[in-house]
Image 1 (spheres, rainbow, N blue to C red):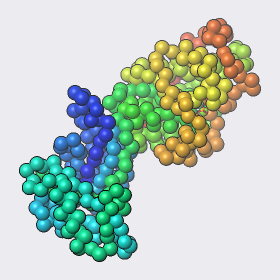
Image 2 (cartoon, rainbow, N blue to C red):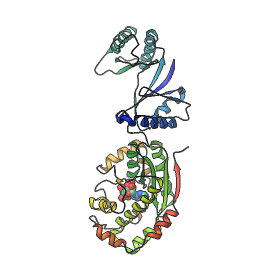
Image 3 (cartoon, rainbow, N blue to C red):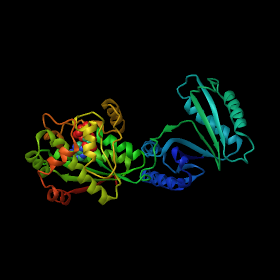
Image 4 (cartoon, helix red, strand yellow):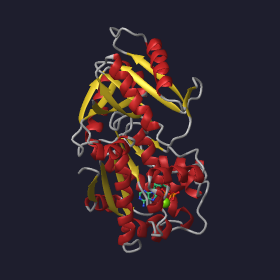
Length: 390
Ligand code: ATP
Ligand code: MG
């Protein structure tokens, strides 16, 4: 008898000829997630198996797999020889464990015969094994519609038996959709935005703008920590820390007060686009939601987009703050996001920002400053930190 984690994947099945590529990427991600467990990862017949995981790290291995995008679900299973007596006695042991609370439970047997040479059909396995278990225990009954306990048997090279299924994160394996660059602030929204697109298969780079000494060292550390937490889901993140003080001061000196925020956002986008190109990213990602603040009205978003030619992905565009907060809590970024350190956006915020900016007006106001040199300098002084590598 051997223990194994059985990994199911979902949407990859739809990918036709590209399927082997997606599967290979998923296997790579799984190997990385389980690198410290000594697991042997085998891909066979549309499933991935992680063998040799010591019992004492099994639950942490499952937790790690639950963060790997592309996985539909995970079941800890036992693998035994596919003879009927062994299957019955193994099922009995599993059910005994599941019944350890001493209460009465309903159950159902699920069977799948991938090995068509096995002498019983799936239906026969279900009936025979169900009957056998009913005989062995007196505190169980069958419920085929809504059973409390499931005894699952898969007959493949061996017989695999399990009772539990842990849901995975879904999505597509990270990296299968290319690379995107996340504009990350210290707030609640942007880490969630990054999570959502990593889940769709994007590998992430990230860019953060800070305005030292108006923003503190601790605000910077907070963003590094957020990117680190995000990298536990997305894998490796290359985080760029861009000094933004000179540009912000120039904007505040030379541009109309009510337009400073939108102009600042255009400059952030421009610099992010430059860094994205250098990184092989094909899109920018922000945590903006329609109407959340003045710089996130439809007009403002249009003016922001006008500053760059890359597509800008805003996965939270139709989300309420509560919905975003719920995801932030689930992925573990919320507690860090609400730590009270200032962001460069909030430090320089004007009292009455425009909510319906016109592209032409903003472009004109921008000509008050020649940003070329400052942009070059900011890029030159950008510090890069790699997260989630180890
Ligand atoms: P968040 O909660 O992510 O901070 P927010 O609702 O506070 O978002 P804004 O501060 O207006 O919104 O920022 C909108 C988006 O612009 C953020 O989600 C993020 O993608 C980007 N952004 C804001 N500030 C910065 C920054 N200092 N560095 C990099 N990107 C930023
Ligand atoms: Mg913010």
